Image (cartoon, rainbow, N blue to C red; front, side, top):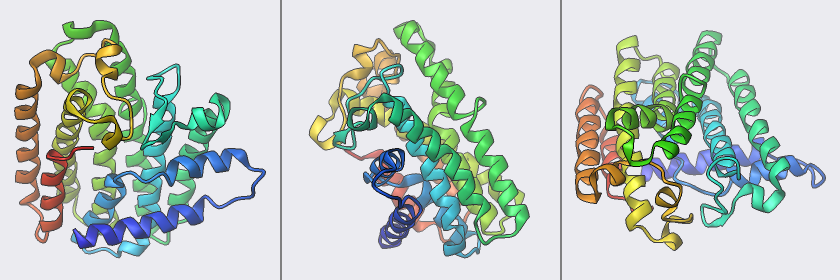
Length: 288
């Protein structure tokens, strides 16, 4: 995982540079507070690694990686708000709205969403690649992707255990897989990969996202709050349908393994994807 750790260091430095500001800019402080709070950096790491595999220059793709991470961070800020999941902790620290207030947290999310596309526009890449990245990211993060999935997730709270597995998979595909797909697809695009390679990267990320979200369901029941850095048991408390509430922990774990295996199978299309294989396996058995 040495390559992945090098990517994380690059991403952290780039985000810090992009989010520098003055002390009187509270919204920028809130943006930096959430974006620089750590996390696994899975999405930007995937983007950079797929760019490398496709034959591209990682450093030139770095602004695109930061853009995807900014979108992810904005979604977490908004997800934690009282009108959504109402969570007080994120990555072991007070949620953005707990630290800065609801209004500033809302603006911080909006600020990160907007800055993401500024990052893409400023990338030293051919215009057609930047336009392609905007198209992919806006579609995957919008109402037909991540936002649509979040809305479905809220509806699933009302349905509780009556929610069907097909609907739940669709929710997770939009809520979680879509942004992972954007990262992998943009990475291949930035590296000059073929349309088929972009499609295969998206297929890999689809299954990775489902496995990741199902493991999240399991950890919300079996995990430790100190290790996770966020509250546990919130799914049950909110009456939210999950694969654990539908099937129990054991079957949910089996489903996560099946999707992880499908992701690994798709990776065989790409030569030199050993680091991605290791990352995929690690995410299946993570404790946070």
